[in-house]
Amino acid sequence: MSASADFEAANRSYAATFDKGDLPLPPSRKVAVVACMDARLDPAKALGLSEGDAHVIRNAGGRTIEALRSVVISQQLLGTREIAIIHHTDCGMLTFSDEQLRSKIRAELGEDVDHVPFLPFGDINQSVVDDIQILKKSPLVLDVPITGYIYDVKSGRIDRVAS
Image (tube, rainbow, N blue to C red; front, side):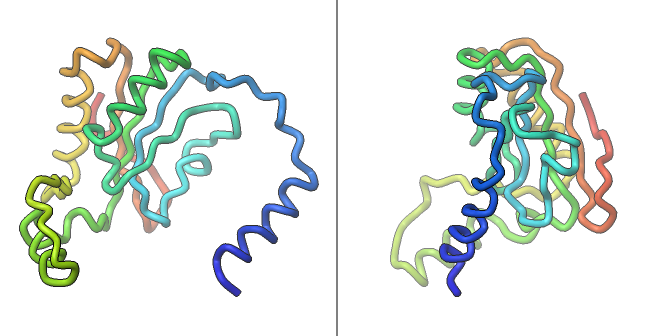
């Protein structure tokens, strides 16, 4: 069975008992979470969030420069007033450089992506600090509490890196 068929079957079960259709559009906890897309990280479970609690913005590495558009919309239109950033141990973003990925794409797809920053990093702690600073320095982001964490994929724990 394909993933889409599995999704559709699971959704039928989910929708059969769904009772959260009246949640308001703005997140109740007024928080936006920027997290890595890694399948081993479930931000809602790891942070004790339920539907309607928070905006969860995900991308490769949990990079805030890529999430900036969503953070601005979250704050300006939907009232979030706190940001959490979550990177994680054993991240794939630690395993390559921009040039390695660009070379792979040129070789396999015949495309030039020199203009695309893939945003890998070499130090997970520093990547969290850097991503906090990107948001704090942006004139588009409100002056709100921003906390950075590293999620441990082996234990499920989060450790605060900076705020």
